[in-house]
Image 1: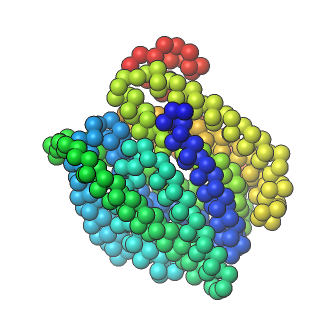
Image 2: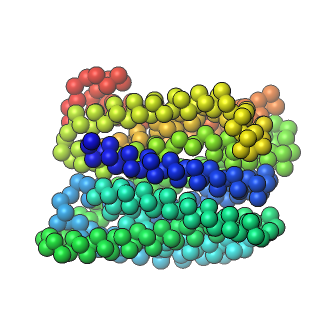
Image 3: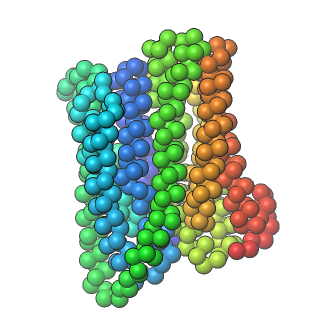
Length: 442
């Protein structure tokens, strides 16, 4: 079995159990927070993830790409450089967030402790990103898999332990839920840091010679990938932060009350999307493995190898994506009623099947674009797809005859457009047809 398939299999198996844990986490949150509290929690979460993205500066992607492409003698110098880079990023972000708290009403009106949680997240994520990028680059996927499962497992244990023995007001319950998320990230940070230190000590004993690139070369290697990828993730996080307010605004204009609109958004985001994205752990696993794999093959001009991986990814996605959406459509009522005691969300789950299926495609296709050095194309595609999607969400969602159905049509259309743009661009870069039959030239 190839290294690519081995790494994918390890991540997929571990991620499957992680998704089962995530499913239980969301069941607990849905029960403890209620529909209104879940809607508020889901509205806060995208903003939290935006801060996480800024803290990481996409170092896992840029560093893993560098390590996969370059000889091992260059690794030590780059790792020292990115550690200094992470320190500066952390300092600037901490100062920036304090200023944001002083000058804006961000997180006002909810539990005050959430502000401190965000500050604690910044250094944790910044330094964990380096270790993630290193282990991805050397393709030690077992450590990444353990870290991913550990994060979800710790969060579940904390949620069950706290909510079982204590009861809180709605605001405090939301704060506790976010506390468990940050605490689990801290545990992952400790695990990856100690694994990284042990690994680097072993490398030092092997007597590998070290060659340091110039600061300019290291800066270009990191920033040429990190900046556009970070902008892509920021834009993605920004759209997800705006989307809840846009959806609720459209629903209010369609004739719903503000509370009712928030509840319907909570049912879609907290229940339908939770169920629908359950198989996405396979897409995320492919994303993690593909970035260093495609980067290595692109640096060696191995177009045929890249095409072979693209065919594998398409078949894998069809193999799990089609059965998944079929189950949602046929058994949606049974799933939502059994696990979440909600009938309305079953209707949303069925309508969202194109959104789920094409997102399963988007993630691995995005890894191909990054590996091929086409991060800017991925950003442009995301911008156009988001503009198209948001326009339809508001135009159709604000119509009384459509409401949430119009919102979902807009979401589906954006996912389809994004996947098609990614796929056509990759085929053009590889000089192959959309049926993947032409000879590849690189």
